[in-house]
Length: 200
Ligand SMILES: Nc1ncnc2c1ncn2[C@@H]1O[C@H](COP(=O)(O)OP(=O)(O)OP(=O)(O)O)[C@@H](O)[C@H]1O
Ligand SMILES: Nc1nc2c(ncn2[C@@H]2O[C@H](COP(=O)(O)O)[C@@H](O)[C@H]2O)c(=O)[nH]1
Image 1 (cartoon, protein in one colour):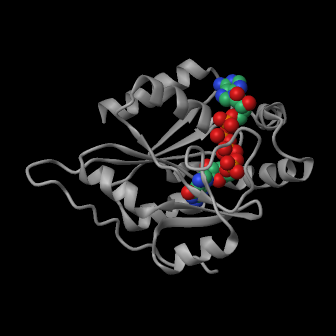
Image 2 (cartoon, helix red, strand yellow):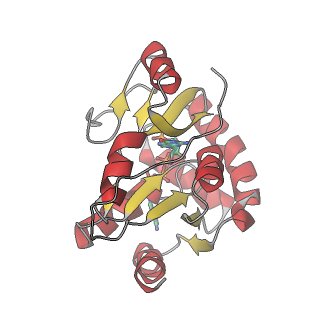
Image 3 (spheres, helix red, strand yellow):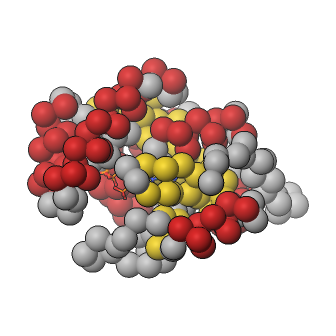
């Protein structure tokens, strides 16, 4: 599979209503993106968080259709070939992608759709949807990032090492984003994200 150029989102906007917004949240694995998004959704249930497709195996407690759609490599390839993914990328040995239709539908309904995705996907979205607002989440330090990956207790030593190697490259690209938020104190980071979303 080679990463193809993404095509347009093409939302069908409900007549008389305004199209919604697309937000991308990126940051190194383990920085706390998922944690912050769950807190954000509890406070603002009107937001829509896209559910990605992945070839990664489910971690304990992860539910198909809630945390991810878990698919085989072959199924993922077919989705790519059929143009069903808005963006996709390989990350630490697995493929991840954003299903196009639900995002187009939510934006068409005037909702704010959030994609929690890695750097390559964020770049693809920027290329196909220049109006996107992109936020990069930074860790307070690399030591703390490693500590968070370990304390999550869900990845092998090899997976943690791969994620940390990728983390530095992602952090180096943080300047490409519209906003940077350091996730040191959870509540403070959340409030910064709320300020970005609801005042811009
Ligand atoms: N501000 C914070 N302070 C301390 N620990 C945190 C903070 N935010 C998140 N964590 C913890 O860090 C670990 C990783 O968080 P999380 O799974 O949300 O990261 P992620 O960025 O979504 O990772 P991935 O991209 O791999 O899905 C979790 O154990 C979470 O409880
Ligand atoms: N480009 C995409 N990246 C995605 C998508 N869904 C999740 N991700 C990112 O993958 C890594 C690893 O996630 P994990 O659940 O295995 O820890 C992380 O950075 C996610 O943000 C997607 O649809 N497209």
